[in-house]
Each structure stands twice: as structure tokens, then as C-alpha cells.
Length: 251
Image (cartoon, rainbow, N blue to C red; front, side, top):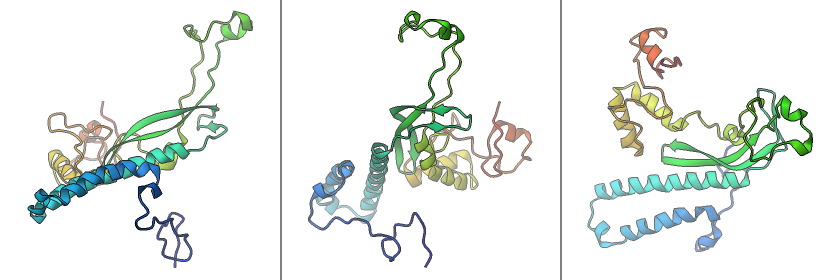
């Protein structure tokens, strides 16, 4: 039997069993971050138990539950991300590839992520470099330095950008669309036009990525050259192509 460090099968002797909530234990036995999920499920169950659902065909039930299930999983993903943010440990310092050591930490930095279940927000710690004073500021005595609220000196040396270690752990993309959404877009883009791809993704996930007029997707390159030109051809100069992995940015 092979094992994986991320396996959560809970069925073999190698991996520990996950804690289970016994039947009838009540909502208090579940983690606090799961409350929005139960708040969402309560009206869904009430509808299924009501007269409208009892008179609805199986197709209608499937359509309704398909939408509700997406929101359920979106809330699960959002709750998990929020809990990860709460548990994120503070590191003494973080050094980036630029060699700059960042020791200042700010909580609550968030960014958007469009998942296959819908949009979620990722909150994490940001590690910042200590601002370096300008030469003129360093020459001033301590009691002659301006207040913190004063306008910064124009000769102040630039400060390195923030680093978010949690982004690496989550393997977040540069843009908003998630890895799963990008994979789905790549598959669908190889089968048809831009509009067909957008419709297929929306039909499968409920996520709308763009429209036919703008023909651009937030955080994504435009979809396809369909290998109609070589990687250095004019089409690739205007778009990023998933089919051949060209990454040339349009001017």
C-alpha cells in the first residue's frame, strides 16, 4: 500500500482517522466556521420538505440542487480559507528572492480568487520590509526628524514589495481564476470558440468569466490561437495561448 503525505483516506492503518461528529451531537460539535454552511442548507432542506418540491419533477430538483450545491461548496471553501487565515503562524522574518529581509507583519491582507464554485476571498499575513530613510533624513538629529504623518522625503530609497508566505502554501495564481477554472478553460478552449468556452464553463460551474464584446477574461490571457500560427507569429503576439503554452503578452 502506498501512502501520500496529503492522503486523508482515514481507512488505512498508516493515516490517522479524522475526528468525526457523532449523530445527533448538534451544531455545537462542528467547527465555528461551518455555521454559514448550515445557515445556507437550512432553507434548502425546508424547500425540499415543502409542497413545491414535493410536486417538482426530478429534473427540477436536480437543477435547484445543482445551484445550491455550488454555493454549499463555495461556503465550505471560504470557511476553510478563513480558518487557515486565523491559524496562520507569524514568522520571525521572511526573505524574498531579492535578498531583502522583511520583519514587519500586517494582518488582514486579502485578495480575490475565482474558484470553480464561485468567488472567494483569501486573507493572509503580509510581510513588509522596514522603510529605509533617505540620506538627508539619516543626517538629521533624532529630535529634528519630521513626524510620522509628514510627507515622505522624495529622495527616500524605495522599499521592497510585500511577501505573503500563505500564497505559496496555497499555490495561488497571479490572477483571480483558480487552477481548476484555468484547467477547465484550457480544455474547453481547445474544443471551440471563445463564446463556446465561456458558455461551457458557466454551464458547468455557474461562473461567468467574460462576454463576447470585451472578449477578455479577468486574470486570464485570451483563449486560443488554435495553433493557426507558429508560436512567434502575429496571433501569439496579441494573446497568450493555452494550447501551445506560449506566454507572449500582447502590446
